[in-house]
Length: 158
Image (cartoon, rainbow, N blue to C red; front, side, top):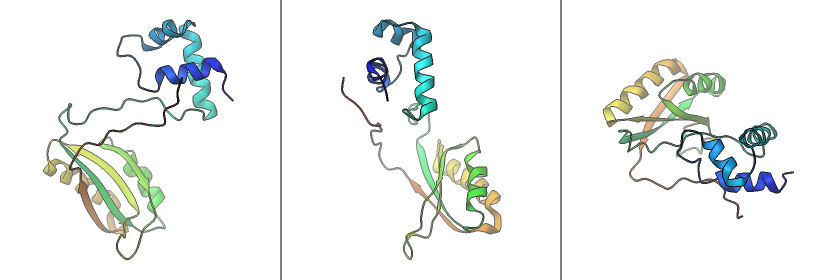
């Protein structure tokens, strides 16, 4: 369970942290509590699973990544978890996950998002992934973004 201060902290941070040198101190000032308490409460909520993560959400286009490709892979089920962990650890893969197939139209069970300045750059990254998957890969494709969708998580009211 969360108390009123935790709730106020969630409301204060759910739209993003302030873009200042000391964001936790700015939130602390806004809420009227010490910065150390802000950090301890956030850590406790992360540890308990009340919140899942605190992380940056970059605007890919603003940093020059205009080609965004979801690489999809048909990987042998016996090794998909092991290989997925290796693919997810690549520095150019922003997220990687396993999903069920929807045969006969969708044979893919491993997804890995890559970004680049061009489709050729994304294809080169996909080729590197294919090399790591080796014979366990039976097929693949790259699905490129055609528009930007607004991403946001669950929001609670104050």
